[in-house]
Length: 452
Image 1 (tube, rainbow, N blue to C red):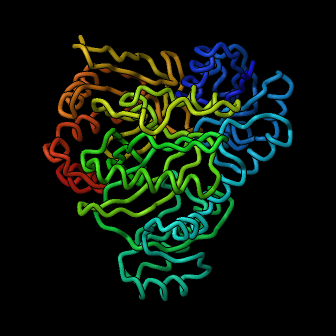
Image 2 (image 1 turned 90 degrees about the horizontal axis):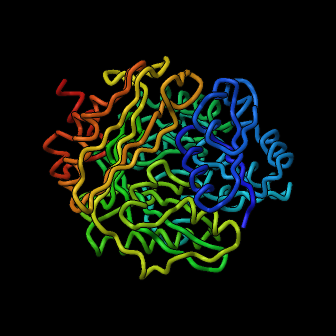
Image 3 (image 1 turned 90 degrees about the vertical axis):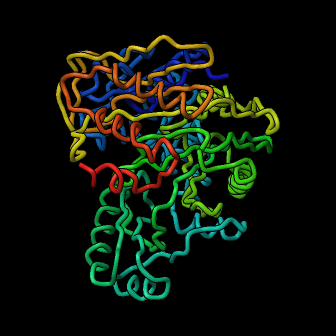
């Protein structure tokens, strides 16, 4: 087992990994930018190292310097968290070359899923249904020709994209050129690759993902699904497990396809296979995230598994802790992402946190509340990083009980000094259609914003 792990990330996920290390008796080292010198992840680690100025490109994305810090401090492994360098196959490869374990899949597995057009081809070869779409396209004229064949609406998507970045919906040929060029420009800026492709736009789909886990000893399992349909600007806002749409038969089919996808690329570690689904039981492969997901806590709450501890165990060469038949889903869990943003227009909000409290109500047996946070009173929210402040996760015996509990927790939450999306979360959780499970990826626009 590793004696020391360096966490190449920041915010709540870095704190989450630090606490897993502490539980396992492993020393933790964090890195921080000048803007994060007093952030919780810098203060809670056993050691912390200044990595650069506030800009992420010069600090948290400086893979060469991060590996150098890991070598200097004697870390045997690097945990990348999510985002930043977590799906950078060059960084994973550089860790291996430096003799430092990358806690995640191999560079080859990351690369095979990182380019979406390549990932689609692999899934098609495995017989896993994919959304109808194209290969890489170079010009708006090529996009127009392909779209005329599959019909509008379509999505222009960045081949190297992720996190909802580099996606443009196109309703008809008159808006193709603008959307195509905009998507290419955003893809180049965000992912250093201007390659884009087209997918058929599936109207009002559900976004459902399956958590997979594999070790290096040919064991691959899935830990059920998560419903991630509540999104704004293609980014998730509320997640839950299990999905109110998925029954046992559909769970078995989706789980088997997700396991087959992981096996196809020799996957090791925690990963997520994402699908778009309709109400007819049909689903289509969307992408595979070769890392831990932001919403992993809801899976932990209903399975009892600690996914971060398991990542570390598997990276150290140990076999999976569970067999497929041992994984059971019990109860219902919901996660809400609390962002520093204006709830009316989603613009990021900055400033100093002057008050922070997530008081929990008295809980009956079988219910629990968890808050994963990367902030504290006195912490300054800057414009340099993602605006996620905290994740509130609850578990109860039923979906109805879990939603009631979440509303109680959010109603008592206090965050002052910046604007937050707490009012928006309350509106979604209180909406009758959400309670009935009548949701889709356009729920925020169709059911919340249009009613304001």
